[in-house]
Length: 524
Image 1 (spheres, rainbow, N blue to C red):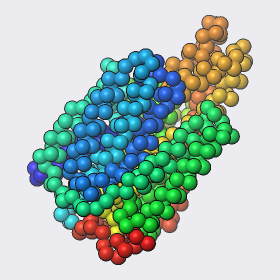
Image 2 (spheres, helix red, strand yellow; image 1 turned 120 degrees about the vertical axis):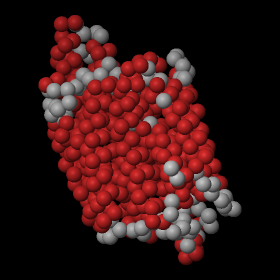
Image 3 (cartoon, helix red, strand yellow; image 1 turned 45 degrees about the vertical axis):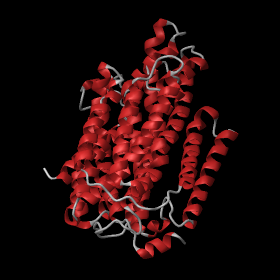
Image 4 (cartoon, rainbow, N blue to C red; image 1 turned 90 degrees about the vertical axis):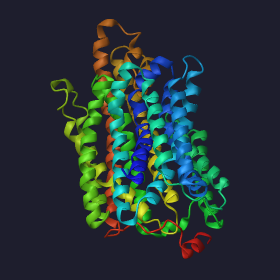
C-alpha cells in the first residue's frame, strides 16, 4: 500500500471519531443522565457543547495547521481527541459529574477542530493532482457516513456501559496516530502570524448565539439575557468580518467568498447540517420515548438513515464528477425536504411493533437520509476545489465551521421549539388525569433529556399511569413533528441554493498556495 493511501486510511479513522461523536452521545443520553444524575440542561449541554466548541475553533485550527504544519497538528488533534475521550468515559458520579462531562466534551470539540483541517491538508498534499479529487471524495463520503453509522454502534455499546462510546475512541486514536505518524508526508511550516484576536472574537460570537438560542426555552425569548446574548453574538461576528478585511494575515481570507460557488457551498452546508446533525438527537428521543424502543433498537432508525445516505452519496459523487455540484445540490435539497416532510407527517403513527424494521417511519427516514447523502459529500469537495486565494486547511475550516455551527444551531432552535410545544401538550394531558403542572414539567425535563418519562407520574394513581404514559408517547410525537418540519424547511433552502449554484465542475488546483492577486485582495 502506498504511503499516501495508508495515510488516507489513518486520517479516515481519526476524523471518523469526530463525526461519530457529533451524534453518538444523543443516543446514549438516557444511560448517561441516569448513571451520572445529570440535570436536563446539563445533558443538553453535554450534547451541544461539542458541536459549539468544534465550530468555534475550526477556523483557528485550520490556520494553525497551515502555519505550524498539517502533519504535526493532525497528530496533536488525534492525541488530544483520544485523551479527552478517555476523560469523558471516566466522568465521576455526584456533584462533579456535570461540569466534568461538559468540560471534557468541550475539550473534545477543540481537539476535533485541530484535527480535521490538518487532515484535509495532508490528503491534498499527499496525492497527485490527477488522483486528488478521488481521494477527497472517498474521505468526505466515508467520514460523512460515519455520522450516521456511529449511533448504530453506540446502541450496542451502551448495552455494556455508556462509557464504552467514549473509550472505543482510545484504541482508534492510537492506531490512527501511529499510521499518520509513519505514512503522512511532513509539510513545511510557514513564517506567518496567527490571528489570535480574530479567533477569540469568532469563538465568542458563535458561543453567545448558540447559548442564547439554547437558553430561550428555559428563560423565555423575551428574557434580557437571551436577547443580549443573541445581539452581542451577532455583533461580534460582524466585528470579526471587519477585522478579517483589515489585517494582512487573517484567520479567514474574505476574498474566498468572491467565488459564488464557494459562498453557496457554505450556505448549503450550513442548512443541510441544521437538518443532518439534529436528526440523530430527535430520532433518538422519539425512538425511546414515543416508540418505546431500547437504545439498540433505536439504532435501527439510524441504520435506515445510513442506508439512504450511503447509497445516495455514491450516486451524488458519480454525478458530481460528471457535471459538478449544481444538480446534486438541487436534487438533494428537494429529496431531503420531501423526506423530512414525509417523516414529520408519519411520526404520530406509533404502530412500530407491527414490524421491528419496516414500520411507518422506515421509508421517510431512508428518503431523508438519501437527500442529505446526495449533496453532502459533493458540496464539501466542491468547496475545497474552489480554494481560490486560500489554503485547503483554511477553506476546509470554513466549511466545517458551517457544518458544526449549523448542527449546534439546529439543536438549539429545534429543542426550544419542541420543548415549548411539549410543555403545552403535556400540561393539558396531565390535567385530564388530575396531574399538576409540576408533574407535566418534570415529565418534559425527563423526556427532553431522552430519559424515562415515567418519573413525572409518580404522584398519579397507579390505575391511570398506563393512560398517561400513552399520552406522553403521543404528545412527544406531536411535538417532535415541529422539529422534522423545520428540517424539511432547511433542506428546501438547500434546494433554492441549488437553483443559483454555478453550472459545471471544478477541479483541484495544483497548489494550495494563495495566488498573488488573492493575497492582495485579502488585505483590502
